[in-house]
Length: 117
Image (tube, rainbow, N blue to C red; front, side, top):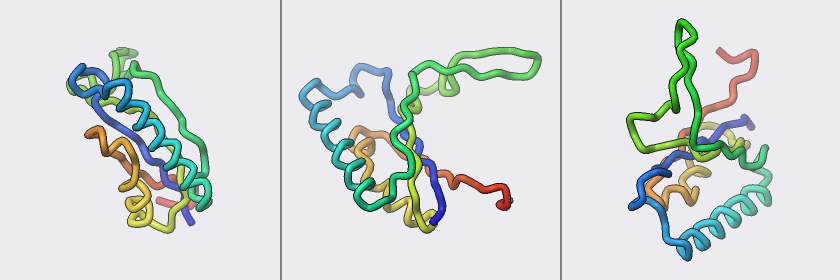
């Protein structure tokens, strides 16, 4: 098994992309069920790492700008680390992520060890 990071992105800023409060409760319940299922299968290697909606980027000459996605509305909402056999297995795990129900997406990256290139 390898460790993969699943990074969750969606539009957290535009009003029309936000679920109603009752929809949000249902959505949060889906997240809890998904995490419980991953934990029961021993696939969740680290709990959810939430990020704020801000962010900064440091560029050459010490220039600091706001957020990595300032031009688009899509932001990173959080990430988790999962145990998976390969990218296909990680994609199967990600395909059940509740953020997809809200128009979001999941980026998958393998956590490389020092021996990986």
